[in-house]
Length: 368
Image 1 (cartoon, helix red, strand yellow):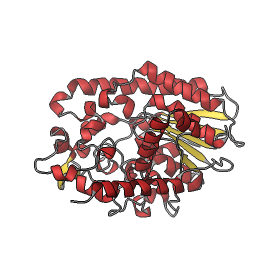
Image 2 (cartoon, one colour):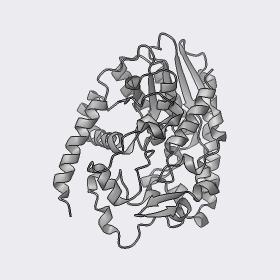
Image 3 (cartoon, one colour):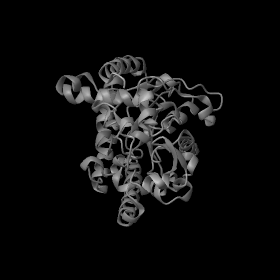
Image 4 (cartoon, one colour):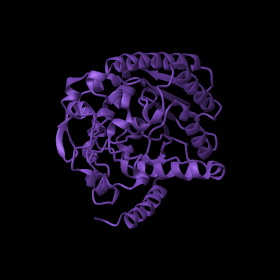
């Protein structure tokens, strides 16, 4: 049994030194540049194929025994383009001063996510930006795992603080899953609140200085999340979890229960319990209940997702031409894509690099 106190201390030191290298001191948004706002889908969370849902594997990743570094072979969509590391946007100094405990906790969670959970280089926003000629270091990730639409304005404020109130050439926004989920007591966000949250953040962006060549704000449409529990291809996908090969269907039908006799695999310290839950259904309980419990949930999620799409479309239309130098474009076609087994990550919830490439391709098609 490893000495967890010593190991955790080493991990924390490694975390902060690693993120310091990835974080941006001042956001240089001159020339080709981009910022990504949103949740774990925007961040490229769980995209790396090494991210098996298994306590031993997660501990190997945390302790540096297993690599989750990006590989060009995983992103053929980018061709010969290098996977240059992007920049990460952290809570502002004023947040740290005014709310030290909250800010420190968030920095820790963002650090763990950025160093271990997220492969930003696989995310759709990164892929689109690189295809548009933006170098990796000028792609700024202000997104954060677990974010909901109510966090969008905070992300915008952090970025504008870093950039001196200036906008890059491209702004990518995706808030897909968490507002539709109800984890840890958070209910599904009402369409009205979703609308006001998105609208408030876009107003903040509209008050900033646009890029000299004009800023394009891309509002990604809500993905067809109901396919996660309706697509036979996805449900039959084979993944490695709990030390064995299982299907996404089997995991869902078991409510992702931890197999007996595997408790030792889940001795991950309490500091990481929210980041690496022993039960992936906790990420989105209303989407991962067994099928027999899902009839009412499916209808509610599908209806709410449709209303979210209407709200995003209306916001984009109302914002069009309102601010000189800033265009707001809604990519509604994303709601019509078909997600296949290859598009889904090992946790049966997030997107693989292939899935992100599918989104990137659709976004690029919408950007004449």
